[in-house]
Length: 190
Ligand code: GAR
Image (tube, rainbow, N blue to C red; front, side):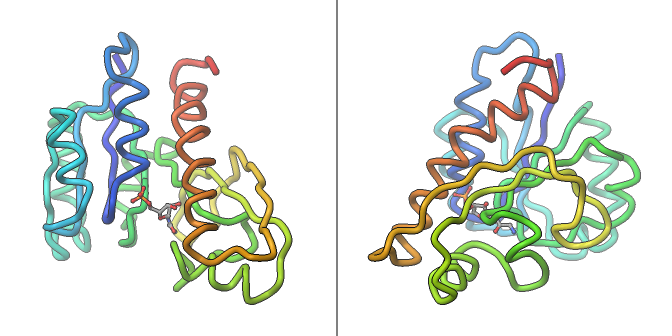
């Protein structure tokens, strides 16, 4: 059994899609969710699915050894970032080298880097008049949004799109592909 930990800071719709996809799977288990926000929406979603959520304050994420100890105690094999908006410090990256992936709501390297997350990206895509956007799933390294790309998928930007309609289209793409990519990486199937 490969145990996954999901890191999430927000609504947790990706965490939910992943947890539902692997429910009752005999090779992959979503063991727990770690969050840096006490009242994140992901808490309620995971509670409904019977998955434990653990809150760690800012200092724990900055030092990170406490997080690594926790993950090792939980026998975590792979880390999935799903709307996690804090920096992953070197102790975690080194302990889980090439075993941490992130999803980003743009076609990296476009719209990556500091300040580029969630709706800020969709606002910029619309402001620039882009006609397509998409998602990127990538390994993480010590820089922001710069690790090796594993998978990308595109979608249209329609003339009457708002950041909110675009976010909905991007979320659908994420919910469809993220669980499948995780499955491919962990057990070599799609
Ligand atoms: C997702 O669209 C994800 O790609 C994005 O935040 C959203 C979280 O939604 N992540 C980033 O922007 C990271 N740079 P969710 O909480 O409903 O899964």
